[in-house]
Amino acid sequence: MGFKRRDGFIGCLPQKFIDNKVEKCPMCGTNDPHWKVDEKMGWINRYLFLCDKCNCIISASIPDVTGFGRTPLTTLGFAKMLSGKKMNTIYIKIDNVGSMQVTKLNEGKEVSLEELNDMAQLI
Image (cartoon, rainbow, N blue to C red; front, side, top):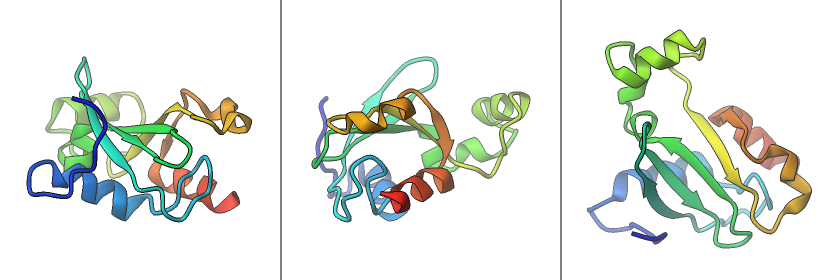
């Protein structure tokens, strides 16, 4: 489908999630990342978020974004519980650091939403 802003009714859930939860890019530190959204289907379906300033890509599982991954009654919630992750925590993966190569050591890591926002404050 490709990255795009989803400000309309369709697809607004992931757009509102990223705009409200990650207000500062954790890679370049911009206060106005103007996130764009895409989807990646696979074993765990994920929303991908692209910062239009540095082109970094972070992602979160669709169940984490929608809230269905925060209970052991769902498959992803059960998998989180078995792997030792906290149920009420949203986990974000740093898929690509974009033009911010100084942050390359973070690429591929999965961190909590709180840790991601803490990273943004350090920049």
